[in-house]
Length: 311
Image (cartoon, rainbow, N blue to C red; front, side):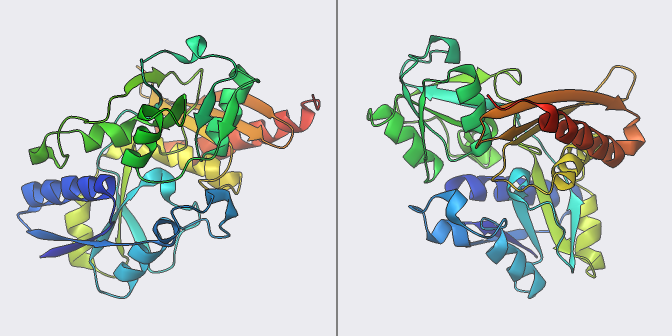
């Protein structure tokens, strides 16, 4: 039996169930979910930026694995701090849904059609800066809570729009046999934001599976569900994040794809929310040098934002 630690939210449970089903299909091992609250979950009304810890959405689940109460933990990769934890190993990146962000409105309008003075909710400094770069007059306010709560605030008119990760919604509304809970019941519509409008967070849409570094049995099971090409692309994005010494609260975006020739092409963005500055750069490199590619692009971004004049 593989004991899987997960956050209690409907989305987190859906993601963990998906990984558990994949593990059983590949290895024959049964599994059981162990839902638990993280520091971030215990303070749903507190602004994300007010927390000191970069790991506020993974701390409890990681500790459960380290303590031996669980065998592995499933994360949304973008929630993981860039610094590794002693005793844990990231064994697999098994899946990635659509990495883009989505604009949630009551009528499905795109960002270009949104009123300039519209009130938009997001807890992400990255999303906020990219929205204000496109439309400086927008009122962008903090938004906490699970996915259902965020969608209802738009449906009820408390917000004109919100920005969410498209992957989370896709996994939540998947058929029950795939770990989701079926069609969305909240009367809102989505418009996917292209990377040129809002570059996603490093690792957004990808799942990450961690286990104890000294547990050979679980390590072998987890390796069986890894997607090597996807893992390498996300490794480049996360290397960029680590080089910038930035966590999930920072104004950093990255997306890596594979070219037709098998090379990696990485797009990155770095913002300074205080000065409302945002720079974008891209870089290509060999498939087997993903982390070097991420570090090199991070250096380019830091040099570019240092040269950017203050508005």
